[in-house]
Length: 234
Image (tube, rainbow, N blue to C red; front, top):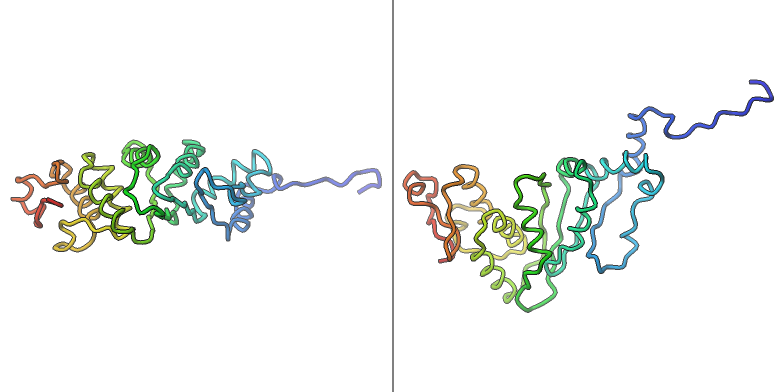
């Protein structure tokens, strides 16, 4: 190299894309994504430094964050506003990457001893989760046991919910909070959500809504699809 020649400056973008991905994975190895309520004021709301580096790095890193990093969403008193806002910021092309993530958790917490207010955020969340035409990530619910007043109110609302997809999602939340819904749980084992899911997979037409909850049709009962008592919470 002659004295007049300047050394060539290399950047990360001069590396092969496959090598850049491996570097990103090392940086993200211990990263946990926290989704907080909108009203929360915390430094954890700040995006990861890689996302703020450049547009190209952001476009290369986001798919890895959505598919690999543990994601923890904190939901207090069924206020899903933070989760809804976070999901709405994800481009539709990235939703499939979120479905690859097997470490998604919603942490449920109730602070009130009064009956639950079925707010707009919870209704929007249930509607989104019941939508069969959009990707559905495998969110897992965790939570402390609900107090008696809250548990009774949730149990009543769940029994009266007519839409099967929304009710199934609410049942998953109730199972996480150890709110027991009387029904085939005792005779078949597992939760009500598991029973409804198995019925949907076997024969979606086998279930119909009543003012008391979901029932299996007489035809399906006769064929043994619903071997347990078909009426829940009557």
